[in-house]
Length: 146
Image (cartoon, rainbow, N blue to C red; front, side, top):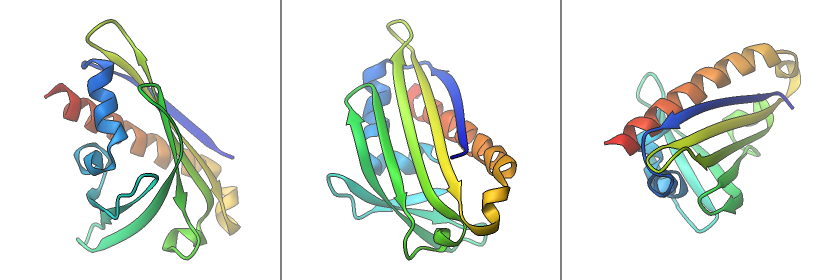
């Protein structure tokens, strides 16, 4: 499974960073292109992305694991979605580690498995994933450092 991992130090205490990443309603503040979040339940939610033409595109997720103030892992539910044509699996993991009293080391890892012809485009998938993760880390930093 192609894996892309990026790190960043966020200038905010770990508890504050956790508060943002642990609440799905905060995704529009930090995750790229998320316009809103709907249908939040204890272990699932729907991100509503906005396309470049402003149309909504829904993606459902379910929480796989949560270690409070350490890490979250969620998986995109692909069956029956437009993403199913390209991906057979997509898992995101966010890990936190204290970096002093007032900053937090954040690691985001995307593990994606392509479907069909996409299986052969791992390098392109990793390049796109790096860009997405970098945007997410910048957004998280901005959301937490305010």
